Image (cartoon, rainbow, N blue to C red; front, top):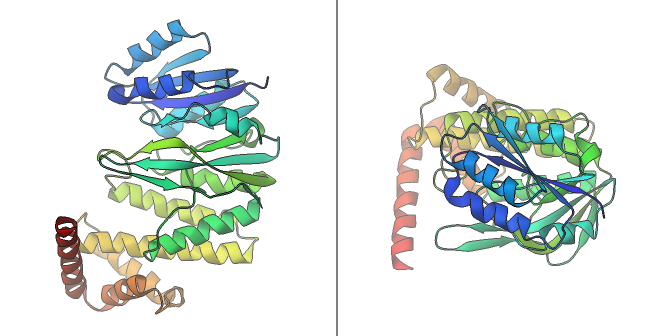
Length: 332
């Protein structure tokens, strides 16, 4: 039976860690190497990891100084011995057939992707396809790009093909010359295109066997200036990764543009501050790339023109929209 390495970075997550590790130990696919990386966690996570290592010989524990999520994942990649690799975040959990279903479609040139459930405090949203589908690496990237562009203009997102490291099974050889960028937020975005491009195909499964917990203190709940700037930097890297594919490059330009529009909109809404020089540089970038905005994309179109012409009007627009959402939530 082929060995699969499951890499779990651990930091300040003791309330969720046991559920995560228990779900991995409960896998119907048993030939696992489970690597828990205690990334200098100041709480009881390190002791919990050691406790589990005594209970199951498949578990390996690394204790290291805090270096961030990328550094922790890289530490796992450096020692793993499995032919295939899966990542699980330590506040998430997986269904018992998570690995087994992956392994039905595992091939040395293939990334296998499953659906997932995004878990909030009062609801869950399923992101899935409804049948097994197979794509080339370029087709996969195009689908992922078009999904992100649609979401940025207000469309719903149900597609499981994401920039995330989790909800996928990778042949280990894809990581021979790839590591996560240390010190960056949204580190997955930096490497996902490289991994897709190195694979020959991507198989997308309809099952939603990964459970992604959205907490207020997590990245999805608390964006910051650094996280958004890192996201934009990652978009620029993606442009370089796909520069030989004209259609993918066009989409990559669009995503970079949309990210910068969103960044400036966050400043207008008072979420964070942007220095005057940087604001002027952003506006100049918007002017030079006006062809990225279509009147059909009314949300983006409105932001674009109000950013260039009236920050005050944009502030009032956001206030009205926020009030509408609060009233709508109260009524419905």
